[in-house]
Length: 257
Length: 257
Image 1 (cartoon, each protein chain N blue to C red):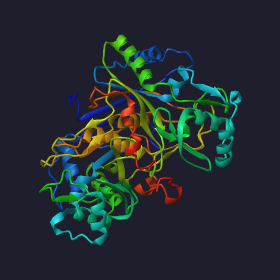
Image 2 (image 1 turned 90 degrees about the horizontal axis):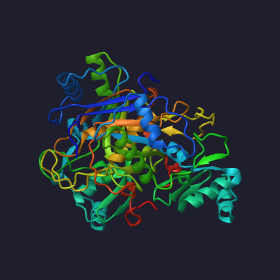
Image 3 (image 1 turned 90 degrees about the vertical axis):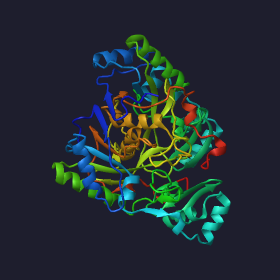
Image 4 (image 1 turned 180 degrees about the horizontal axis):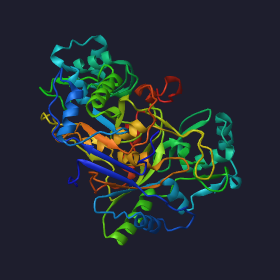
């Protein structure tokens, strides 16, 4: 665990990040953007990359005109008032519908994340309103490729987070969360440590990857000035995680499914 | 909305923040700690203060030995295996129990927040394991007092967030969230703005106060090195909010109650 910079955290957003198209080498593009911004990633830094550019680079963009909705999609579309072709993609991407109502489908993506539309999203996709993006096939693997590109270019070991913006039960507004990680354990446990009065902490596990993704979200923005790549220095995290699946609460422990 | 520093965000944790006791003037203590740390808050900065020190300053600490559990508390304690006196406080603090199971009560606090134990917490309270803290009576008012103290001392208009650490449905690990605000609108809306391809954003509202609280959480820690006060520079936010209640999803829109 790196504790050296624990009292200060700095985040920089890459300016002028180029348009990403299918097949682009995203790791190389990120390395080039760091160089253009005079960012030199150091050991222990964290690179947060918005899911949207990862999906684009990995050709996870679909033209709704090519989608033929099945009977289940037609039925759920009728119930929710959503485009049946979009609902078809949501069902293809997910293993279960968690909640739905007019205008909203909350689904369990096959990666385990429970989120609106199973990550099928219209915004920030080039072309037309008919174009939507899907989540990357394997966001941890996407993060590892970026991590390797940064290591090769700068000889530094960074953590990489693929971030998305999720709504939450109970609370208004979306926040950035981690859907893929490399070189960073998404959870930091305080269990068994003593608080300042010697009280042994029994349950405190902090979702540091989500807090880092949320912090990056403050710079990434959503509208036309979007900045998909953020470099973070000073975060404390463990490096022995197995992937973003650690952030998914197992079904049997989740009181909200 | 301040956009000047949108591409860089900096967070500093106050070191050596003193032990807070009931009746302490928290605003003055924070001002003194900024001076001791050579922090000079500027217009548009955000000060994040952990709920625990606010509760202590406001005498929101209870000795369980003084609590007489009622029949409802005894029944829920038997079901959950929790201390009946703690359950009594949870019920007093909340308007409804949202979910419960062995070892866990998720309740709707009278302020609207749905969280474990309605905010009744053992950790980081001096005295003994019998001492627990409750949430501040009015965290927005607590935030306003701190904001006024900072304005008087430094002639600067800052946003203030009272933060707590909440677990979430569906995802493992807790993250920092805002339970009180002053001088900052907790939500930032992109609705009606165009994305980089001209697609009109229809639903994008970002819970910036929660992202800021989560970012501060990365520095605050939980164990004996806890740092309850964090100064953030470079965040983009609106200043016209009405309070942290904006972060609470209304019952009729919440699919998880």
